[in-house]
Amino acid sequence: MELFEKVYRMTALGDLVAYPSYILMILIGFGLLYLGIAKKYEPLLLVPIAFGVLLANFPGGGMGVEKIPEGLTLPQIAEQYGIMNFVYYALIKTGFLPPIIFMGVGALTDFGPMLRNLRLAFFGAAAQIGIFCVLMAAVAMGFTLKEAASLGIIGGADGPTAIYTTIKLAPHLLGPIAIAAYSYMALVPVIIPFVVRFSMTKKELLINMKEQDKLFPSTKPIKSLQALKIMFPIALGSIVAILVPSSVPLVGFLMFGNLVKEIGVATGRLYQATSETILNSATVFLGLSVGATMTTKAFLNTQTLMIVVGGFIAFAISILGGIMAVKVYNLFAKKKINPLIGATGLSAVPMAARVANEIAIKHDPSNHLLQYAMASNISGVIGSAVAAGVLISFLG
Image 1: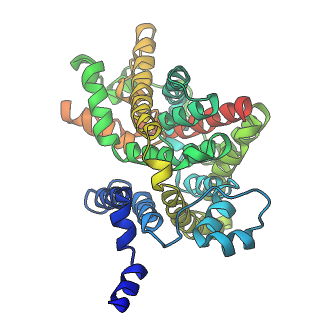
Image 2: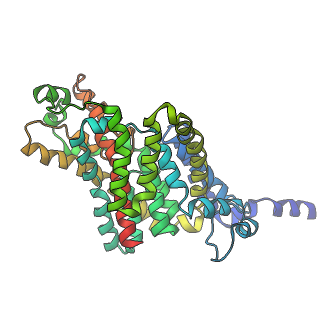
Image 3: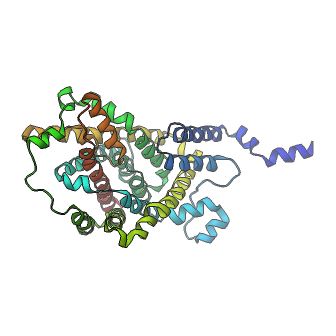
């Protein structure tokens, strides 16, 4: 019996029975794994995050991220608090990984559709309205300004941006905000049609962008798109650095990644490293360590529920803001724009653009607006990063 008792104490069964909250968090982890594996909702990020949740909530494993006293060195953190806390405080708390991921995103991004349709890029800025609407609402509900800003940034539909902003302003909310941000990004195919259903008319859905181009052709064609695509990241990176310096870690790395892609063969090795090896490694560590912040103490509370609800509202308002901006534009312009393009002003690239294109084709099989939607969608990446920089400047 003494042997059986020692074996029982060695296992985690006693803690699971004594603290059922562990079981609930483990079930949440399994649920996220199901969404990532079976439903294929952002699997590259949701699977590592979900597994991080499991690792953090197996009692006795010592893999949950904790609040650590200041003054400890990284080796001391690793020795006293375990490998997951070491990874978190070395790579996440320092703000290192989100810009690295942005560099990889930049290497995978083609700004060509946006440069060919620059007027559509403004709707990516309009879609950021959800960030500031929810920020004000969150303050009214009792969140601090920094917490409200971290909650509102979910409306930008950009996981790395949400994580970076939260690290800088409200690191204690990192777990639930990261989960909400990536979950709603994965649910873009559900949320955009939901908002469109209640905000657009049949006539607006049938606006054909290619027909509009034929009726009102561009008077200033681009002579050398490739040269423009090389100059664009340099110029935009410089302008943003001067106007919003706090957004340089995100926008600067995004533009650098894009530049090495557009230069071509001369920087081919850099492009391959940023878009594959570095990006994939950063994604693994980011997902696991963010998931490990979702301990029972950090996640199972009323504040987390408010974050989940507030994140959905921010997402929906951002989509609606982009749609309404196009509607206002159409009141004064001869060349009409399908408001679905405004709905893609989120940073969920290219998922939002694909969803908008599918909705358009459903109503008119000839209305392929993917390249137009990508213009707004890509600009949303830049818009959310700049919005994050503004919030960090004012509140950080």
